[in-house]
Image 1 (tube, rainbow, N blue to C red):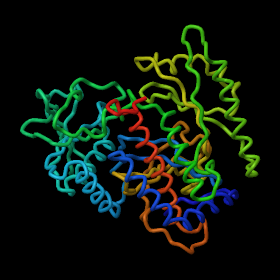
Image 2 (cartoon, rainbow, N blue to C red; image 1 turned 180 degrees about the horizontal axis):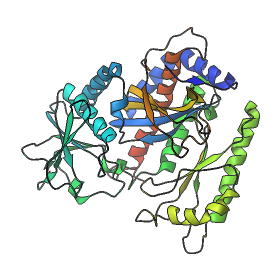
Image 3 (cartoon, rainbow, N blue to C red; image 1 turned 90 degrees about the vertical axis):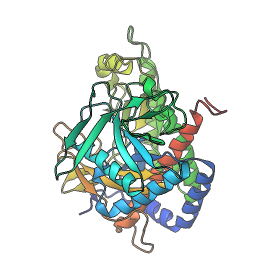
Image 4 (cartoon, one colour; image 1 turned 90 degrees about the horizontal axis):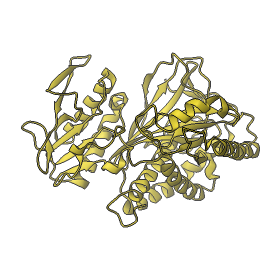
Length: 431
C-alpha cells in the first residue's frame, strides 16, 4: 500500500508532475552535466514534504541511517551505486572500515549498519565496523532479530593510518555526523580515503549554507521546467544570534520571522492556498539543541524566549550554537490509513537507490507531524524512482510521484555538493 494525498489543492503539484515528466530528457541531461563539474556526496538522504501544492526538501543528511528500511527490491540498485562510488574513488579498494555513531546502539541503527555492511560486501569489499566511541573498550557483538549480528571493534590509530585489529582499510566510511566535534583520531590521516570528508560533519556544516545552495539549484531547475521555483523550494532566512545574558537578538529574530511569514502569505495568496502559513526554527548548526520549533506568528517567540536563549546558544548542548535557520514550513498531505506519511529518499553517489515513508501515529497535524506518542513505522517504496510512466494522468501514478521525489532529492544532493565545495578547507574558494 502506498500513501495517498488528501487535499483538494492538487492543481500546482499535478502541473509540476506533468512538467517534470515532459522534461525528463532535459532533466537527466542537466544532472549529467552537473555531475561532470561537481562531485556528489558519497551517500545522502533527503526528507521530502508533499503539501499537495508544493514539493520540497526539508532536511539533507550526509551520514544517513535507516538503510534497513529499503525494500529488498531496491538492494541491487544500492549495490550497483556502491560499486560506481567506490570505483570512482579507489578502483583497487579491498577493505572498507565503517565508523558508526558514538551513541547507544538501538536495534534499528544496528540493523542499518548491517544493511550498509551487506551493500558494500556485495559490492566486492571486506567490511569491518570500527568504533571511535571512547566508551567502547573491547570488541562487542550485538545480536539482531532474525539471527544476524553486528560486531563493533575499537579503532586503532597508527602514525598515519586508521584501522582495527588485523585489518588495514584503504577506505574509511563515516556514518557518524561528528556532532560532538571532530576527534583527533580522525585528523591528519594519510594514504586512506575518508568519506564523507571531515568538513561534511556538523562542526563545519550550516543548514543556512545548504539552503542557500539549494535555492540556487531550485531556481535553475524552475527555469528548466518553466515553473515557479517556490514550488520546489522552502523559503528561508538565517536568523539572528541570541545573546544568552540579555536576550539581544530576539527582536531582530521576531522581525525576521514576521518577514518570512509575509513572503509565504503572498505566495499562498498567489496560488489560492487557504492554509495558514508557518515557519520552523532550527539550530543552524545541528550539533546544538534547538528545535525544530514551529510557529505561525512571531508573537510566539515571547513564550519561547527562555528556551530559545538556552538552546540557541548551546547551553544545553555543550557549546555555542551558530545562529538559527528560519525555514518555511511545508505541510505533509500524504496519509496511510489516516496516519501521516513522510517520504525519505536515499542516494549513493549520484544515484537514487530507494526510500521509504516514515509513518506517524494518527491524530497528528499535517504541519506538526511528531506529536507526543508518535510511532515510526517504515514503509518501503514499492516501485523504483527511475521508471516513470509517461502518459499517466497526473496524480494517479505512483512511479511518477516517486520519480518526482527523486528529482527533488537529487537537487538537494547537488546543493550538498556545492556546499561541500564551498566549505572545503583545501579549496581555493574556501569561504
